[in-house]
Length: 162
Image (cartoon, rainbow, N blue to C red; front, side, top):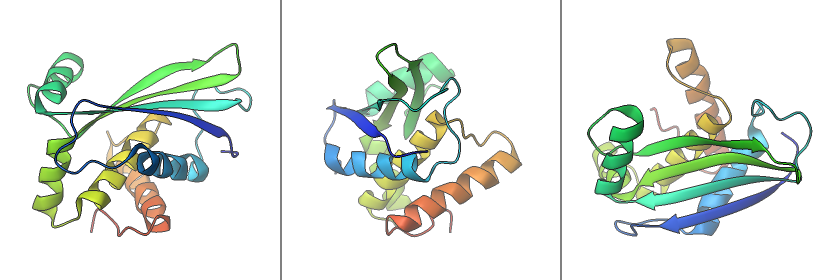
């Protein structure tokens, strides 16, 4: 994807355990957009900017959204919601990521990883979903996981699947 300005908005409904700054989240999201080979459906020409929102939530907020949109009654690490797409003003609304701080922290501990590396992984994972990558089939999972590992390596993180 060609270099394009990222309009990035972060809101925090939860800050503990450790949550990265908006600048750090934007850096990780930008790395995905720079490395992506897929462009969002509906993107016919280079937008003036891509618009991405991130909302950091706690257990209750994640559980509520996961139950409503995925019919799963538990908190989850990340949810990705596609955006409205191309706008008349030239911007492209990519979507929103909702990341559950306590689940990410718990997973980092369980996997023997730093919170920072787990947050980077979840950000990369979510943006790839917004770009159309998925892991519903084995072939899709192989492609998406390889892309995640490649981007995370460029950011200085080890392969999250090893």
